[in-house]
Image (tube, rainbow, N blue to C red; front, side, top):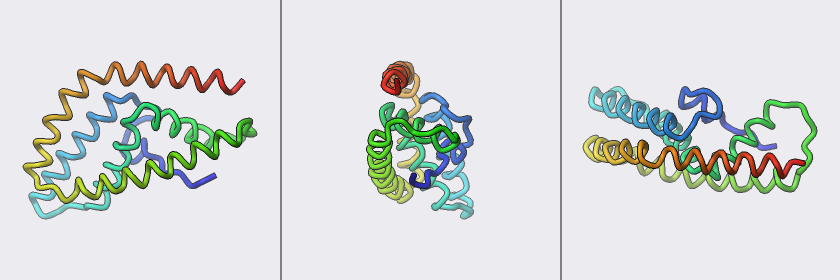
Length: 148
C-alpha cells in the first residue's frame, strides 16, 4: 500500500471529521498564514500541505476513498477487495497531485486575495456542508455494503 499522509492530523482534526469542520479549519489556517506572512514569519510548505489536505478532503467521494484507505492503513485485517483498493490508491494519488498543484497556486495569492477567498468559502460551508455530509454518509454506507 502506498504511504498515505494523515491529512486529518495535518489539519489538526479528529479522524473522519465532517466537511464543515474541515472547511472551517482550512479558513482558520489560512487566516493564520496571512497573519504570519504579514509579519514575515511564514512557512509556505506547511500551508501547501494544509491546503492539499483541504482540497483532498472537501470532495465527498475523494474523502470516502481516503477514509477507507486511512482505516485500512491502521488495521491488520486482510483486505477482501484488493482490486478496489488499488483503484482507490490510484485515484487518491491522482487527486493528491491535483490538490498539490492547487495548493501551490494558493500560496502565490496575495493576502487580500486569500482574505477574499476565505470570505467566499465561509458562507458556502454553512450552505452546502450539510448536503456534502449527507452525500458522504450515503457513499460510506454504499461502500460498506460492497464489502460483503
